[in-house]
Length: 220
Image 1 (spheres, rainbow, N blue to C red):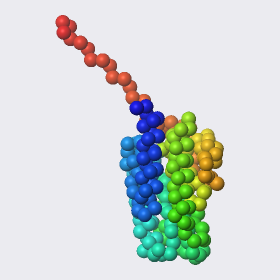
Image 2: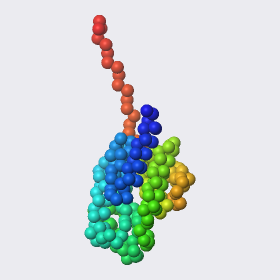
Image 3: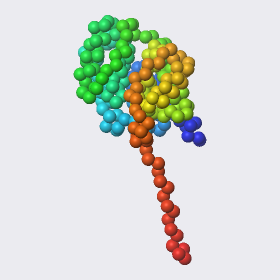
Image 4: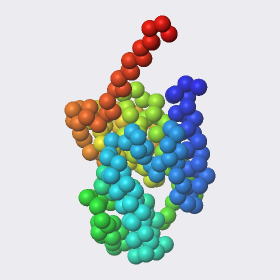
């Protein structure tokens, strides 16, 4: 089976798992043969230590939000390179500010982007639609030449798609262009850390050198 077909199949399985389980519980995604909570260790542009810190930030932030505000808010926490995106709904502005304060106090958080809105929680249909849009966006990024799909984190809330990642300006502009044309995307919000082309080249794995063939003993 060709690699691109395998990638698409793996992504389809991941989206199906997300649709089936993410509305009621957090489930790990299997993408490209690796288990991830939204990222792939092998190809992620963050260091392995930062990836672990981001996972810890999300877990601790979720726990503190639940213990402080209970079930009156619906907040999704996404951390990338210690920058935290907050999406979801709260009943009032005071709770919106309180959630941000709680998350800002979590260890290793560098900054918080507060995109919470004062609204009733979305319906199951809306949440399912957002998950579907996220799956479409990931598929588009995977199929776009000159983009490394695993360099991006994608979150969709009420038709607004948030893009996170460490990318060059060219990658940021190209990703924004293709995502805007994805069915179901109403708005794109970029939360990128822009890096130079030189920085990107240092992140890419060095090409594997071919091993010399073993010499055949004389008379063998």
